[in-house]
Image 1 (tube, helix red, strand yellow):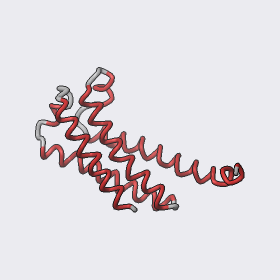
Image 2: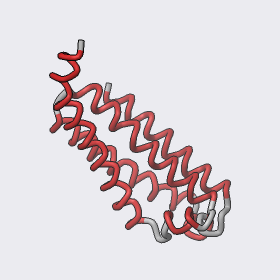
Image 3: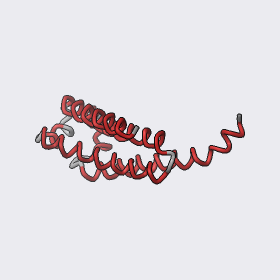
Length: 133
């Protein structure tokens, strides 16, 4: 039993490490396209920023998890993760079109806007993940 675990440990480490790097890179890119600093807002107690960023994070994690499960190939997993990243960034841009005041609402801690953005991100992430299976 432990032999099987030890034999698959390098593969686990490769996929897990790649997924963590992808998450960090995504959060950095996302921070650059948003006109406000989510982490600073969250540190200051802004619930809306936490909900919004949390939903976006989950919306990106879901397709990565499905890419890992379904691909069994690191390059395919990376490709699908790149597509998931682009889709989540587009979700934010679409949300800005739907809610033109989004750039002011998140820093102003208007929770309804954060919930909508989180739900939109998670919903699209679920659809994105399901398409990978």
